[in-house]
Image 1 (cartoon, helix red, strand yellow):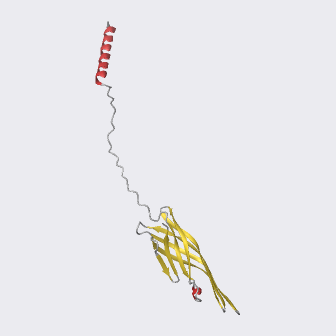
Image 2: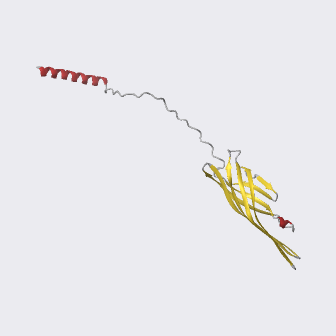
Length: 193
């Protein structure tokens, strides 16, 4: 009888549990909730505008006075374009470039000839910096080369060589057409679109 009572109570208890489960829907699952620590705030900073120096390229149009040429009425200026480009290195915008400028002309007269030649090799080094609207190119332009004047006439042959290096420290606003000038030279900035 003892076992019968236990069986009845177990049956009654099991029936009651089944009744509660089916009448209340699915059993509730209780999970512990962590103590709230605050809602994380994500701050998005605006992307800075691209630098006007980024990917910049162009040329320096150089006009150099060839002094001895003008003496006999030859074209007095050697003109050439020196290409450059800008690359980003460690957060700085580095300007590099270079190229030659050459000049050669001959004056012929009854008395003989007067010829002038000049060859310059040019190197550009510097930086581009500043925001849109006020960016600048600060560069050093080194021009190394030689010039020769030859005079040939009956009874006279003269050669007048020159060789040397000029370094010009230049600063241009980042505008096509900006220029710098000094004694015997003019340099114009030409930017590629």
